[in-house]
Length: 211
Image (tube, rainbow, N blue to C red; front, side, top):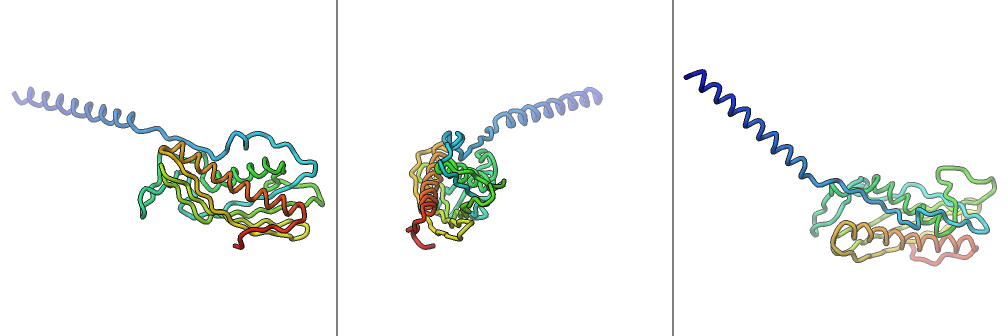
């Protein structure tokens, strides 16, 4: 009788282990897949046509709040709370994603050459564009608000301009809509910065809000 009881207990333990393993497997299968997003738009991925007089730009790393310098999307869920979304991520850390989107957007808009990571012909001036994301608030189903500031300096004569731009883009529900809102906010910044570069290149003073 003792031996029979022992075998029954062993069989019961094996069944329990199997049940736990099956439950863990089902739980693993039910985890939502990670989604990756990019700020690059199809127009930024195309090659810009150079202007008759090449413009060279340098776009150093973007300054932004430390909480945003991560690959996860950071969204506001309540007035005093933000959520870091593990399953919704940028294709790289947000500061890199933002720098690449701004630089490629400017290069395409201006027909310019981005020489940040390379050289330029001797004697050719470059416009150094230092950009800062001063404020950023992404609220799913509501809006994307951003405050960009930038300083543009021409390398050969030291002429410069300093401006800032606040943008607010309404967004519908869902992460796809939120990312599209961030893309539009970046496009607004590109438009403002490109306009200032064009004005400087023409030798005219830039009129904008003092920083």
